Image (cartoon, rainbow, N blue to C red; front, side, top):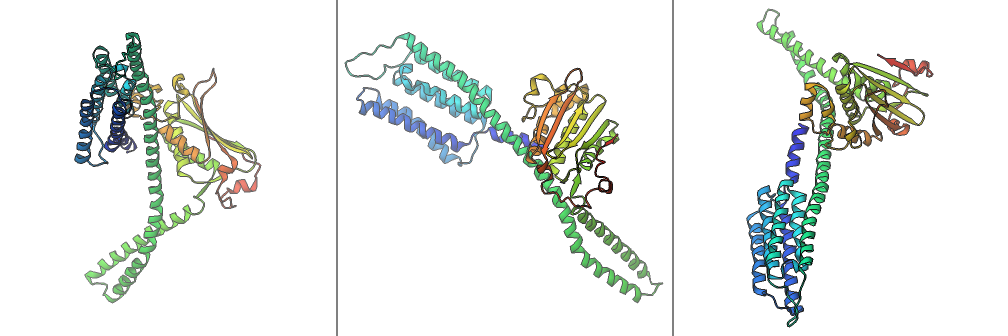
Length: 460
């Protein structure tokens, strides 16, 4: 479900809003109009003023048609956005043709449509617009009207200088387009990954709310069920034992008792969650995360030791999800064994998850944990190849985000040679791990209360 939502978000995030493009084009139209007017009437230069405004009017008509035809919130398809940006390139080329070609200082405005495309469209479409802009610039080198200048004074710009401007447009289009695309793509990926994180958190919240709904249903249904049981009992006394209705009344009373038993269980579950299940000691938290892997046959070794009393924390779905995701990754890549070691001191609490697999590939080690950076390609076997094809690289990012929200720091490294495998170390400041936990005697195990010094144990 998260993958489907991420794909949909990626599809919507890339589409350019019509209102954004229309506003940018109004700014361009205003700039072009002011420039032509100032050159003609402010500086007194001779230029084809009417033809220039006819070219500008073409953009005005396109903007008006778009504003009337579509709502402001409309998102353009890739084809429509590409066509509009291509029109802007051709319109600018026509205006530059009338005003000096590449000798006009405003010829660098060819970069603007390419920059917009790089932030909103695919690289292939941006490349096409870049080639169109360079092609128009090449035509302007070969043919254009003279640059508007003072009457009676000739201005001769060397062809080498014009070639330099053409080269600047070519390089600027390439480098600006690539840079803008990279920045925009990283921003899109981060936004999509955060949206996927919010979806995971919303799912966890919905699961938590089910407990409250169950308790509310138990309390609300208790009274009517008691009334039904009382009426059934009275009818049972009033009906003779040999009456056929007596069997139906007996069945009714049995079903009422069954419903009351179910509601009692729901109520007791809610009470448990408000008590000892709401807080857990560190070793219980670790065992809860490891437990689903034990039936799978993987050798998961759990080691817990530390200084002083064992830490107690509130049950946090985000922390459980994050640790479970990291343990799942370790189990996927492990050859034969995974070790989960929990340690604590008066200053910090740490959980370290190690496997004996190949470890992180060198080319992604520095970027692991970022959105859309997947380690699935390094897994072994066909089964891992299938997961590599379907993985989006969001799992570890979501886990990292959830753990850091709890105050933890996630450190991902490889084991030092000659050992092999990946190491994930999660460290909390002790106060952050204990924050909000009700450390009461009934929370800590009786063994820990009887012998606080005995705080080192190993689970196979």
